[in-house]
Amino acid sequence: MATKDDYAALADKHWSLPIQGKANPYTSMNGNMFSFLSKESDICLRLSSANQSAYWQAHGGEPVTQYGSVMRGYVAPSDSVLDDANLCAKWFTQCLEDAKALPAKPTKKKR
Image (cartoon, rainbow, N blue to C red; front, side, top):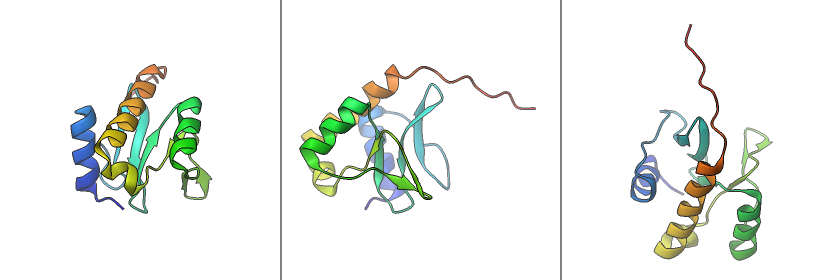
């Protein structure tokens, strides 16, 4: 379980990126959300399919579900991963690298 402050501190430490969204905190790059704080207070990281499989093989876990839908590509690191500085850095770094590899989404113009 993480607070908004915990999530913001980890995002700042590993990515130096601001948290967006007041009600549903998240980070994004080039229009792609790549992490968020769930309504259950879990930090969720977006990983490529290969890295998601590697994460689950190494640490276990289940797909992230929000509002009745599976969030494809997301894992929710356990407290043991988040508490281990090396593991936390590994997966946060991998998350950012995977986010950089995503194609940019076009911005929507305000009317």
